[in-house]
Length: 373
Image (cartoon, rainbow, N blue to C red):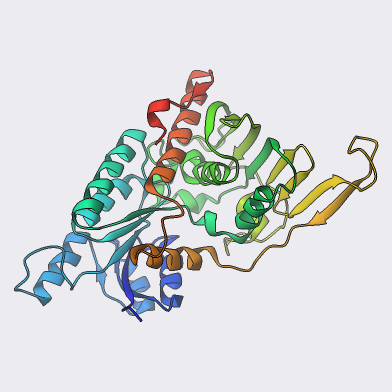
């Protein structure tokens, strides 16, 4: 059995400890350290009984100090991999630094806050994989969520025929504390707002289920908090396949219709089991969240006068973050290809940026062919 993959967590805020828990649970991985400049991160490091470093350079210096004869970053006294879950604007520079040191990277969504910086990260990822073998993955963990996996399987098995349209919802009310220091960046237009924080998740799932998005149009919701960042939008989508859809996004409205509540994935948000996607096909409708397929009953011609019959879609019990860590280990060992590559993560950023542009210009935005990777 190969040695365990040693993983460092960068960022001890909302998501970092959840990644750390999954690393600890993985039989093929071990938690190496926490990196975070905030003194409050000491409590997280103590909880997991691992060292705390203020930045990557301190981590690398500690590795060199333990092996003074090796003056290279890439040595046996540094972690094998890092999960980057620091503020959005830091994802690209931190990932580039890690890859240059020969450390494999799983970077949380969004992989970048602009398309240009994402393309820069992609160039570095390709360069370092070819020179020092460091691999980079995008942390869209919802591709491992059992609800998404079940929806993907249903569509792949032609359970609703050919997909024609989708209606999506993501609405809830975030608390005021969500925007307070040290996470005040969530209220800024640069790196914050529900388009980059939340919709980018949904875009990646829609890409995974229905293929690339080709065009978007969006109108911004009313602002009630006075933040620089948007609070939501109504988005019209056109997919390359011809599927069309709408998506309503809002982080200031109480609602049970969102991914977190529908699936129960986030322990801080009570599970509702309510729908958040409805995918309409030529032979039926798939409702994701409550996990139902509606089709006409047997014996009719499948027209409006025929009875609609409801069928449950079976959902597994996998833990997405646990599945993602196991997948990271297998990718590092060369046993699997990334389920969500940096290219995939960047495609979601391209569409998110187009949504924001459409909100400002009031015109439909075609997804630039040059940005399709």
